[in-house]
Amino acid sequence: MTTNQIDPEDIELKATAVGRDLLLLISGGVRHIGATSTAYLEGEQVKVLTSAVPHHKEHTISEPIAIRVAEALNKTVTVVMGIHYDNLTKEGIMEVVEIVNLKVNQYLAQQI
Image (cartoon, rainbow, N blue to C red; front, side, top):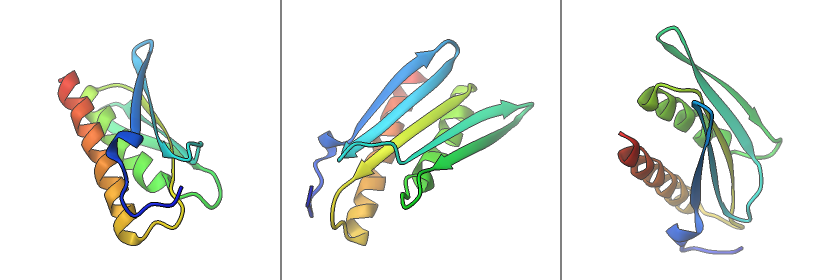
C-alpha cells in the first residue's frame, strides 16, 4: 500500500480480555505480526518483555504502549503490533505513531 495520507480508520486497535489480563492487537496497512510486548507488574514496578521480527520496527511503539496500559489498568498487557505502508516518509511514520497513540488514549478513556 503506497500512501502519503494514512486513513486513521485503517489502523485498528482490538482488545481481548484473557482472564484478568489484556491482549491488544494493533494493525494497519498490510497487517502482520512485527512485534509483541508484554508488560506485567512485579511488586509496584512494571516490567516488559519484547520480541521483534527482524527488519521490523513496531517494537519501538508496542513496548511503551504495553507499559502505559499495564500501569493505567494495573494488569498484565500484551501488545501485538503489525503496521506496514510502503514508502512511508518520516512524517508518515510520525502520523502512524500519532494515530496509534490516539487510539490507545481513546481505549484507556473508555476503561477508566
